Amino acid sequence: MKDALCALHDNGFMCSLDDFGCGYSSLSLLRSFDIDIIKLDKVFFKDLSEKSKKIISALIALAKSIGVLTVAEGIETNKQYEFLKMANCDLIQGYLFSRPLSVDDFEKWCVDYHPK
Image (tube, rainbow, N blue to C red; front, side, top):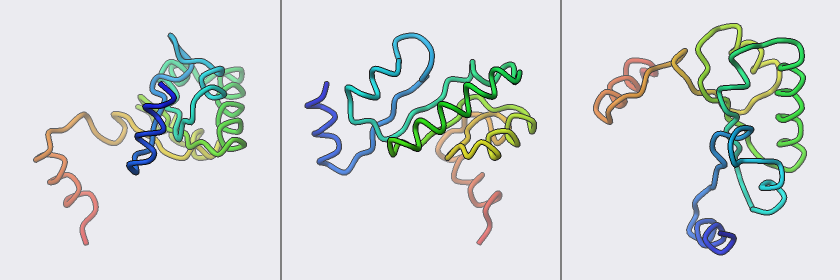
């Protein structure tokens, strides 16, 4: 795996760790592999209790301290979005912005959403 990540980096690709915080993705992977981005699993954002907010903030701070970008997955509400902005999350994805789109629909969305 380390060799594959090195080859990807050598060819100009960034590597992300998807669904971070659930299943097989763990903190030890951040130590073991040269990851550029962690994608925080949507499970973290279902309930924004104070405990959840502290965990999310700590993960974002940890990522920043080791030079890793963060992406919040599955964001559906303005409350989640506002919290993540305050927590300095790098990127946010989810239905709050758009449902999954075909390439053609995405290109149209880009023009409509970001006119020049």
